Image (cartoon, rainbow, N blue to C red; front, top):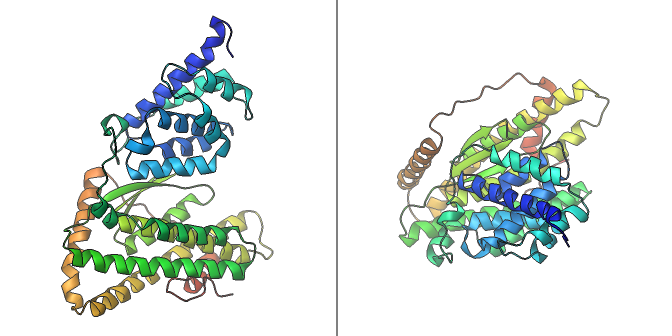
Amino acid sequence: MFDDEADLRPASTVHILVGELSSAYERGWQPADIVHLARRSREPSDAPLAATLVLYESRRTRAEHRAPRDWVDQLRTIGEQYPAANRLARRCPAEEADFRTLAAGLMYEDPFHPVQQFTDLSLTWTNLPGWTMLTPPPSTWPSVRIVDGVAESATRVDTKVLNRIRGLLAKAEATDFAEEAEIFTSKAQELMTRYAITATLLHKGSGMGDTPVHSRRIHLENPYLKEKVHLLTEIGDANQVRTVWFSSLAIATVVGTPLALQQVDLLFTSLLVQATHAMQLEDADSRGGSHTTSFRKGFLAGFASRIGQRLRDADSRAMADAADEASIRVQDLLPILARRSEAVDSEFERLFPNTRKSRRKAVDVNGWYAGQSAADAASLAPGERALRR
């Protein structure tokens, strides 16, 4: 498609851009981080451009067969979020020396990307500093990912169960009918709770030893970022998961056991949906302007605070039930839980030795109490309705 030497410059620029992406990975950044940063830029088409390059680079490195599972999951999600980018990346030759087809697709297919945008994005990626390395970078991946079925079963929710949970939550978010959303959310919560309890008992009886501690990043979207982080932190605290917040990037990192991290991720998604629905109902009266903003911030803060307490109470009940089913005393479970918490704390301190606790600001009183009331109605236990209206 390029006929002379001048026309080769876009391909050369894309080649450089993919190289900068690879270098960013080696400094601790991950695919979802890259696309998240592009979404936060002032240029709307940066996100599909970044997604195309991320997906193309993954084909060049055979990430699907070599990368850690969390990395592969991120790529799969990006492909689902940006189907056009996924199609373009898949049809372009993955040979390292041929970037011409990719450059042509980026420049002449909707959305159209000028060469200057390639240069700007390359500069952004070049200037990304080194970040905490949460997973091995591509340069350290094996030629083929080594899978230990026994170890993986202890660190990941069963794919069928996870897909069912995600499907139910997606339906709850998509429906316009509150009653239908309540049913889907309640079913998802019930399935998740049953699986978590069963997995804990099986792991304890398997003699597999301590569960490793992992980390993952959670990318938050405007508005009300601080209030959403508050909710995430409360959920994490109730599940022995530590949270650190990078405000300039709108990215949180959570540290905990693999199953706990998935539990927190699913809970955060579900409860954020419930909080948003409840907030919109409470805020449907005559408030406007800054009053609406302050009320909503107070609402989310109150919701998060109360949810944290409810989750901690539910954790205590679940521990008592697990001990009863296993015919052991609760006191015999406490040392196991203490060792797990110590392992999480140790890994958190290793990754983030210089963190500081954030201070909570004053919030709208009416919003706070409305949020607490909504949290009391949120679904936590199997069989309850998601939100009582």
